[in-house]
Length: 358
Image (cartoon, rainbow, N blue to C red; front, top):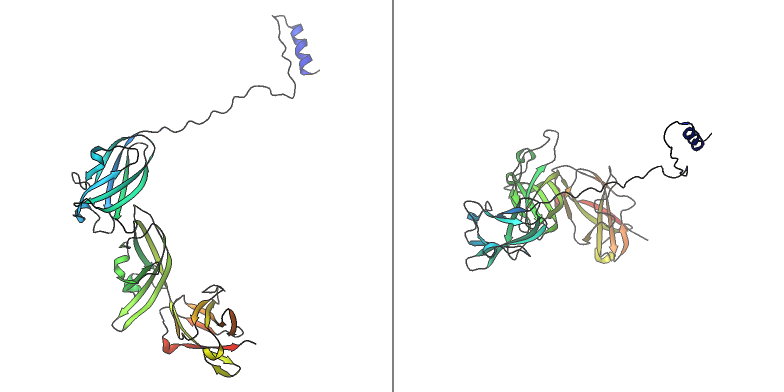
């Protein structure tokens, strides 16, 4: 007996008031399910905005360090500010100002430090979002120059004696630094190690290349002990702090001879316009200078390589006539060893014989 017939039978036999039978399709839904309640957006709140400003790369970055600044001018599109947005650099001992009653949303801003001749001396821009009271830290940089910079520090890779060597333990007293292949700047090693930082020059916001050479400088010269290349990404209005670990390096010095059989030839006689030099790490199998190699003039020997990681390398040199390889040592590359902290000079050059291709 199915459920519907049984229910009707029970209704007939019950001694009470009427019984109602609801007829449904057996395969239909049994009941109404309300849709899930949509989450409510979080509440937002108006608030005050406290601007605090500093001046990039100048002393402590305080108003007292820039006596040529008369006032700070703030512009926020769509907002009318008290006193036209012009405020003293320092108010009651604070390098900043509080602006009141902003609706909850995102705003753009521009801050300009104005001199006594009404010229803009420093500038910064950015945006902020109000959802209650907030603080906006702004770093102003010189007008007309780069609008970003970085605080940079370094350390040295560990060795068997020290996991985190000091400058003295690493044998380094100076660190040479350059950005975007510019001029090298020599700095005291102690100025950027152990929690200390040095300021970069002002830069355009974005990604830059940066290189470090840890040097042992004596009265007789300077020897590279450590090296590191990397990238540095800066942003407008706020300096970044970055640290780099420098790696122990050694050197290699190379020259070459062009051989047509047993006959030595000059670059001109051989028609060789340049060479492509490469080293293959015998542990990793990787080429130091990629598939193309390091291009040098045929007459440029000897070539000094100062920033190689310690290890054994297959040395490969190709003599090029235009884009064609006409001389090489591909069949018999020598294996040279690079030792940490040991540099090779011109007198230490290893000669690689390049044989003519037929």
